Length: 255
Image (tube, rainbow, N blue to C red; front, side):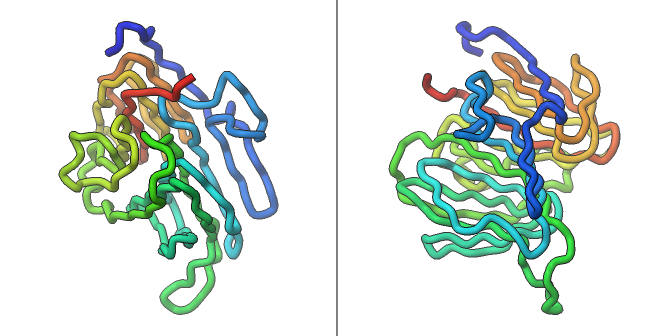
C-alpha cells in the first residue's frame, strides 16, 4: 500500500445516490459527472468515474449518443440490452455476458431494451444493468468493443475477473480494458458463501443484488457501495443470494 494514503473504509448507502427518473428510465448514480448535479467532492474513486444502476423500460433506451476517451463496461443483472455503435459492432448483452466498449478517439452508440425473443415477441419487462466507466491509460486510442461469456465461471461463487488491463490477467480470462492499473471482478454468492477482497490502493465494492456482511463494517444491502483506500483483504459473506462487483485500482485520476 502507498505510504502517502490514509487507510479508509467509506460506506455509501444506496439512498445517498442521486437519481435520474424519466418515463422510460430510472437511473441511480454513485458519482457526480458533468452537469448532472455537480458535486466536486464526489467525482470518482480511484479510476472509477461512473457506477450507474439503470432500469430501462421495454421498447425504450438510450438513443445514439457520443463518447470519447473512456472505457465503458456494462453488466446486465436482468433482461437484455441491445448495443449498436458507429464502429459496426452490435450485440445483445444479458446476465453473465461481460461487455466493454473503448470510446477512444470518439464513438457513437445506442443501448436499448428492444431485443426480440426467440418467438419474435418484444420485451415486456425492464432491463436492469450496471454501467461503469474508467479512464484509459492513454487518450485517442482506436475505438473498440469486446464481449465474453463468463456465466459458467460465476457458478463457482468466487471472485471472477470480468474486465482487466492488469498484467496478472493477460491469460485471456477476462475482457481487456485500456488501463493497466484496473480490474473488475464479479461474484454470485449463495447464503453463507464468502469471498476475500483484493488489496490495492483503491477498491470499490458494489452490492448489485441481495445482502452481504462486510468484515469489520457489518450489513450491506442492495445498492450499497464501499470505497476502500489503502486497505483491502476484507471478507464479504452473503446473508442472502447476492451479486457483488469489485474494482481493484492501483492508480487514481490525476488532479
